[in-house]
Length: 50
Image (cartoon, rainbow, N blue to C red; front, side, top):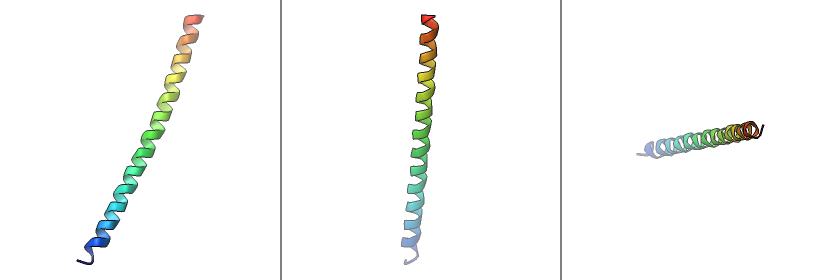
């Protein structure tokens, strides 16, 4: 029984690290998508004005 608690703690920390990495990737992709959307809107506005 003494081996199960360190293994569970290690698994929990690994799962937490994976979730943190996923959250970072999602945040980065959202930022890039926002940049792309803003660029597309700007181009559309210049096309309609010109």
